Amino acid sequence: MNGYLILDLKIADFEVFKEYIEKIPKFIEKHGGRYVVQGVEPEVMEGNWCPERVVILEFPSKERAKEFLNDPEAQSLFSIRHKSTTSKLILAEGCF
Image 1: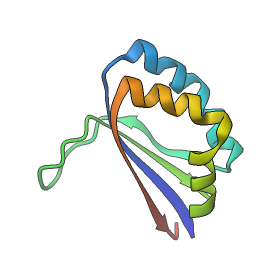
Image 2: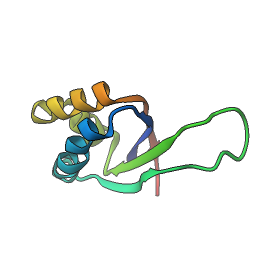
Image 3: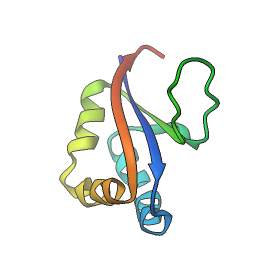
């Protein structure tokens, strides 16, 4: 089954966040991942969830998604994301 990382984020400092945007794709690709949804402003259809931006990444497996998140070389980029955004991240399995 594929692994999907779903990120809900609010950008607080775009100038700082730009480095993450520029450099993270190579780490996503390194772990077999790809963007399914890339930083779009979602339309809330039901409930009170109000994300500002959504990113969905697809990996060949849940394990590969976790490898991406634990990649030692990407940790400084994750730190940039944590400093420049307020974000929530979940991992889900799917069969698409």
